[in-house]
Structures are given as structure tokens and as C-alpha cells.
Length: 92
Image (cartoon, rainbow, N blue to C red):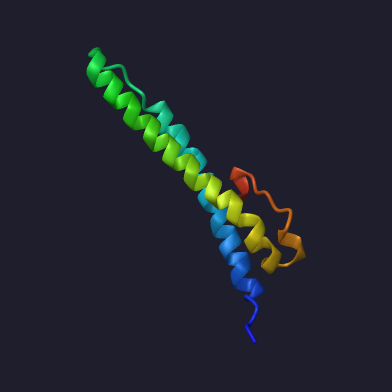
């Protein structure tokens, strides 16, 4: 007979997923803010494409954290199911 996940550990995982989501959002903002103009069309295209790939990767990580949140929340207890923290809740 399989054991159920520990609600305390599930709540901890949920908190870490929330923190990851916030960090990814902030990092995406930082990446997009770092766009610079090189003055060279080919170099600019390479830089823009690379930064777009980084931002897309960060969005994918955030989407995965969002998708895992509700699954983990059901094991963390009834208070965690509809939890959507703001950036200020998770930290700077």
C-alpha cells in the first residue's frame, strides 16, 4: 500500500515553486532589460535571438512551475490549493 506525501513537505515544495516562479519572472524582466544596440546588424540579430531564447527558456520554467503548483497543492492541505503569492510574499 503506497504512502501519501507528507503535507509539510508538499507545502515546502509548493513554497519553493512559488519562489521559483517569482524569480523566473524577475529574471525574464532583467534579460529583456539588457537588450543593447550593437550598431552591427548581424551581431544585433545574433544577440537579439540569443536573448529571446533565454527569455523563452525562463518562460518555460515558469510555466512548468505553474503547472506543478496545483498538483503539489492538493497534497499540501486545503489552505494551499488556491494560493497565488505576489512577489512581495516570496521575497526580494
